[in-house]
Image (cartoon, rainbow, N blue to C red; front, side, top):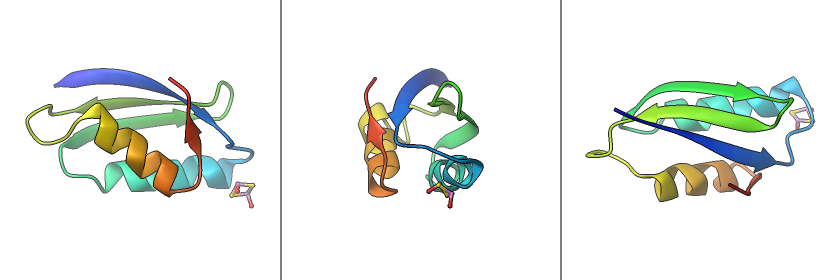
Length: 69
Ligand code: 9UX
């Protein structure tokens, strides 16, 4: 498993946090997700054979947020 922390812009409430959690958990290859509002970020554990950081970023952006790091 590989771990990454992505900085997320645009989450303003816990509903947003839940949305981001949900889209990330639904991706194949993602084994653990921890999203926080303050700071706005997601800590993700994933299998690099099944997914990659770009896919994770695109899922977050598809949910309506910006990934800055
Ligand atoms: Mo709360 Mo976050 O209504 O969009 S989910 S601001």
